[in-house]
Length: 512
Ligand code: KIV
Ligand code: ZN
Image (cartoon, rainbow, N blue to C red; front, side):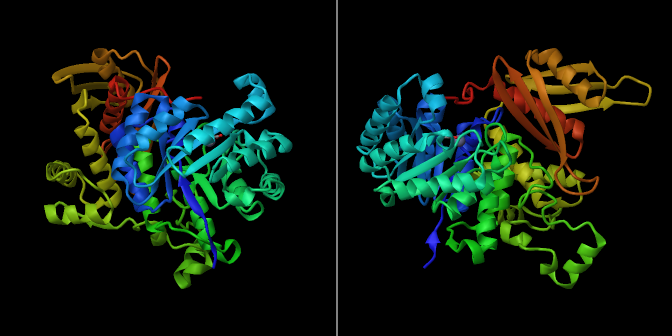
């Protein structure tokens, strides 16, 4: 029988460490539920000791997730491990993931500890974590730049203490597939008790090789767990992309010969949800989940695909959850049809009142836009979920004027703390005028780091989805807004970013 490959998703922990990707508790719960629908084996829900917000999110996720194991990261010390155990107490299945750096550089410069001290701390941490659960994972941080003899000592010790998963971390994306895979192979051969643990890969994408390194760790090294994130989200250049690992292993089963638990039809919904919540747009040519991943532009390819799909397609779009830009609803669609489509798309709203509010938004959109696609429904639901979070800033209306040879002007009405404000501004373009108008009253003093516009579907009728990334006093947040009018979408995105800056639930990204 083929071995099983465990999919460990760390979107909510390592993914969240991307600047601006930090999420609220409700957003994390929504993503965790989608990860459960995707049937990932392990959800790393956060880093409990990093902040009270992280702790509460893990606790809430541990309370609602039934099928996947819920995991918390912790440094190798009693306080972090106790916090992780406390946050995970209600989980049906829980894992504590503890780590300490093992490379000479990290031990000397960052930890200022001798190798013997690091070894002792790793040992004590795993021993302590085992008091709370049998499922303990240990990671030698910066493993790929660590010395093999030292790694052998540390890993043999932590397995003897009861670590059931050994996660070989390529923390800075320094690995090269053959070398990385061979390091794991050598460790497994040299460590006498290596067969008592599942070996895992955890790669960063600094040289664009995270997926290749992970797969080499599996095929050459014999790893049977891959740590990854939706859309490859993560610090710097990101982590291993879940969708690429899953589809590589499925599509090339002839080579990998591994079983997966994943429901691949939930991949695209997961990708869209993470992108909408974090404001990190997916590049159009991204494998599996990019808008062009299944688009054939050249005549020869189109002709081939029409004659026999597998001439140019190795996967089926519907198998990963693409719904082929179908017009799904229109302005005559009723509440039941809307609710049924939400269910088909795996979009869960908390209450009937939320369904009603989302339906009202949908009707308002359908009045302005004849054809409503699944992508529009995702945006409507995302807007409604933001509105439920007691927004401090709320968009009301906008009028703007731009004409060749004249400086664009905008008049925006929005509410701040429940009070409706009218403001006017001018700028280089209508979006600039809109942001200047809002700032004339909001006076946030934040710096705009990124402004991007994406068409949600095809054609000029499409809604525009705007992301605005703001920075203030060391905090970076992303706001997202969607509307058929991209200036309105920009105003909504800007106000959504201001809401995040204003929210006390938001925090700095957990860096260690
Ligand atoms: O990249 C890394 O080293 C990590 C560890 C905590 C596993 O994320
Ligand atoms: Zn990492």
